[in-house]
Amino acid sequence: MKSHGYENTALSVLILSIIGFNPSVSYADDARVVSVHDGDTLTVLVEKQQVKVRLADIDAPELRQPYGSRSKESLAALCFHEAAKLVQTARDRYGRAVGRVECRGMDASVHQVATGMAWVFPRYAPKDSPLYRLEADAKSARRGLWEDSGAVPPWEWRR
Image 1 (spheres, rainbow, N blue to C red):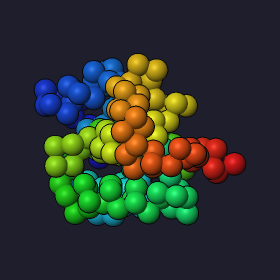
Image 2: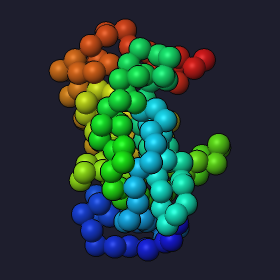
Image 3: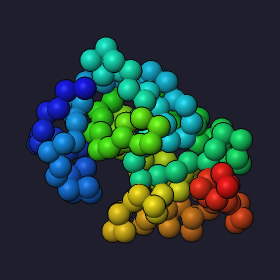
Image 4: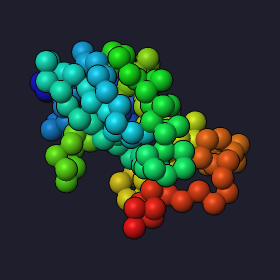
């Protein structure tokens, strides 16, 4: 993935306002989503290289967990086979890229939280992230996984 540094695009402005500028961040404006693994992980083809990406700041239900399949389907409906923009901010302990992915003009993390298909991951999301407001709105509207008042976050379910 080539590093473009700061670019004055709508996505870059949004991302930079959320995570702050970091010169080590990698940007890819010409990518395509080639597979969706679950509600918070997908593979993006960037410069003929497949990059497995864990969406930043969210945690979707595990596939065997209630809403796990629906969450995956939601992400696939937004991104599968679509052109994408990727802002990689880190690598996780499994070697996956961690970052933000935009498909059809929509940030995938924002989409998943706003539709009730993922939680904000408090371990990684900044305390002032706008994702918390979107999660609260989804919860009060009982969208997606919030239909179940006893929904268990995946980080607890995995234990």
